[in-house]
Image (tube, rainbow, N blue to C red; front, side):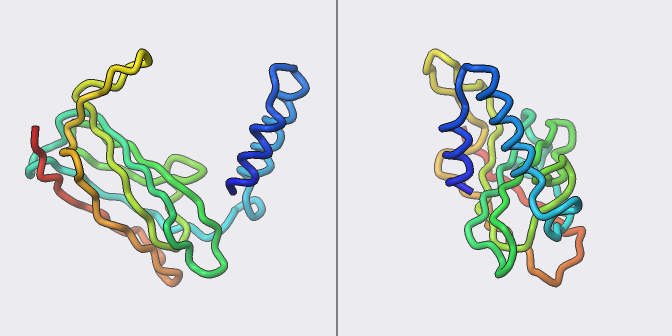
Length: 154
């Protein structure tokens, strides 16, 4: 995947033909393994902070650390709102789930977003907090619940 990304970056130029080529390459890569792509398992859940709804809207990023044999390493994301903290994970679409494998999970929930001028942001997530890993087994059909509570500090 990193070679594909590098190829896209090398072919992306300010010229219109470079932009068109990059968009076409992304469309081909996003297509994955045919019209339906590889098997995915729906993953949904709820995040709380000290047992309460999240203090702000936020995001999860799911980075594949060990794809299941025969499956691609496909990253995914999910967003949640401060209202109830529920989320549904998506990789190509916003709710299509995860391909089987083990995922390292990253959580963002900002008090103050980092700024473009380099001013660091302030997070509701305590420094050093690491959400639990998530493993999707090949034989699972889903949906899988992924609920957890962040022991928020500062």
